[in-house]
Amino acid sequence: MHARLSFIEGPPDGIESGVASFRDAVAPTVREDGGKGAILLIDRENGKAIGITLWPDDATMQASEADANRLRAQAADEVHATAPPRVERYEVAVFESF
Image (cartoon, rainbow, N blue to C red; front, side, top):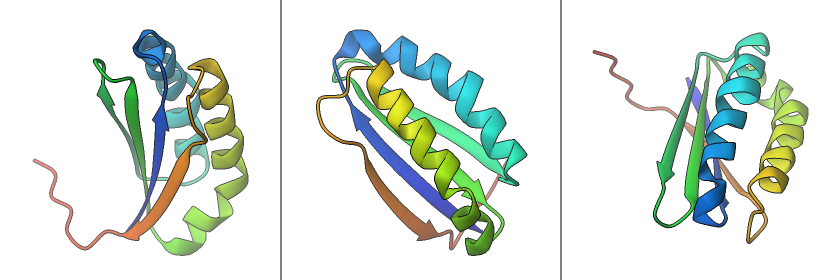
């Protein structure tokens, strides 16, 4: 399994818009692109968000890059990001779901 993490920071009052965008646009697109999960972590006080998308393999994650780039740019605009989004990619070594 592989994971792509997207880090976006903006004013705290943009968090709800970011949550809605992740729920309504990102999660369905990840599902359509063959992803296995989508998680959004937020810090309401500081206006920070980390979007984590899970992929069955590196090839599927790489195939979704165009959609991810588009959605990330859209989210940054919607929340009035204070810096360009940052992206990191990882292999998931351990995943436990309870």
